Length: 104
Image (cartoon, rainbow, N blue to C red; front, side, top):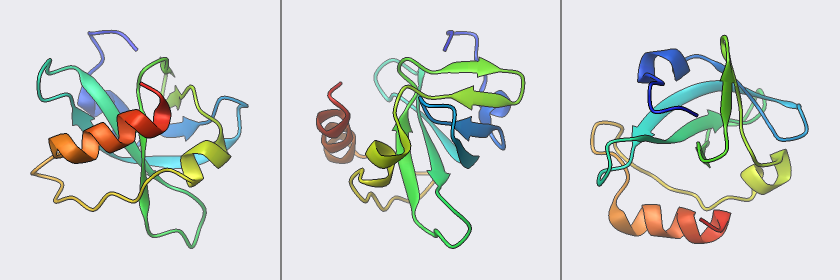
């Protein structure tokens, strides 16, 4: 990820895991509240999956309309469940929980 990446480039991009398995379409894109940098995307895994999983953009790369994240499907699938209002963004507690889970 570069600082120049724009939210619009990531919305509706296709997300791929670290083993090049397709995860699905990017749902939401969140900025870090302190730095303003793009920090998280959400993806619903599978056809029947309704929960959006948060995935860090740390270590991710964008290639056209694809975003390749640095984590595998199982790690993402087992990530903490976070319920937020999209316009509110991640709370500091939720972000800390996700940072701990992903080892950031």
